Amino acid sequence: MARWLMGASPATTQELWTAVDRYICDRLLPADAVLDAALAASDAAGLAPIATSPNQGKLLELLARVHGAQRILELGTLGAYSTIWLARALPPGGQLVTLEADPHNAEVARANIAAAGLAEVVQLRLGPALQTLPELAAEGTPFDLIFIDADKQNDASYLEWSLKLSRPGSLIIADNVVGGGAIIDPDAQNPWGEDGGVGGVRRFYDLLGAEPRLQATAIQTVGDKGHDGFAIALVTD
Ligand code: SAH
Ligand code: DHB
Ligand code: MG
Image (cartoon, rainbow, N blue to C red; front, side, top):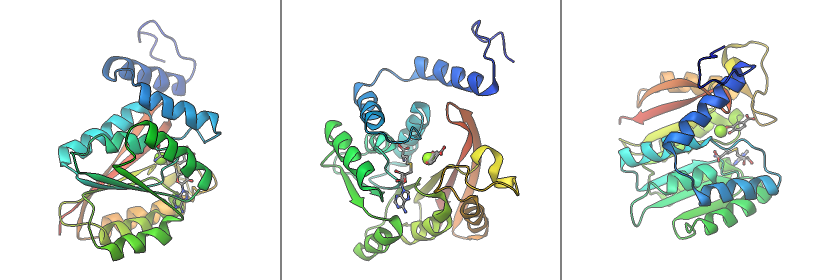
């Protein structure tokens, strides 16, 4: 164990990852009352503590800024923590649509979005994403950036819909593509809870690798949320 790390001697690898995340966040991310309040309200309402970590949220914001995204789509709102990070990257007039199936999560998220001053920028659509995505496709306007972070068993379908909702140059990002190594464990089942079917994530990789319109990679991450990863794909044509 890395005992040299600021005098700390974490007992487990997870404690080490958590301590390093704290080190990073303490130095790079200023205290943020809005985001803290969103997390506290989510906790108080009993939402699962599975939002992106602060440094991951900042990564999403930076990617959206670098990309110049003006229209963002998010699948899986929870309490709108990642939503707030992404929405902050938008230029004036930008829009974020976020999809959430659970009415209780959606209610908490709407309050957090309003408290963040983003009610005009963020539109939350309640319902299973596979019902809402065809409606968005029918509406016709593509998205510049799509963040897939809902029930993992449908990740391959979400990627297919994301292609329909994209234009050349759109960026597609997916959370939870490693699951502590579950993707390569033949005995693994639901590393991300009851919605977590790892088979869906494997089909997502198969499609990502086979789809000629996508240039993609995935990166493993460790930190406060354990060992997981992000996939990132650019729609090329
Ligand atoms: N993006 C959030 C975390 C999302 S957790 C953040 O980082 O802050 C996953 C969310 O997906 C949960 O709120 C869950 O209710 C929602 N979800 C699960 N199945 C869904 C479905 N079929 N359609 C839309 N949302 C779904
Ligand atoms: C879990 C983590 C996530 O980031 C998510 O989107 C869903 C579930 C989990 O650790 O269970
Ligand atoms: Mg996630």
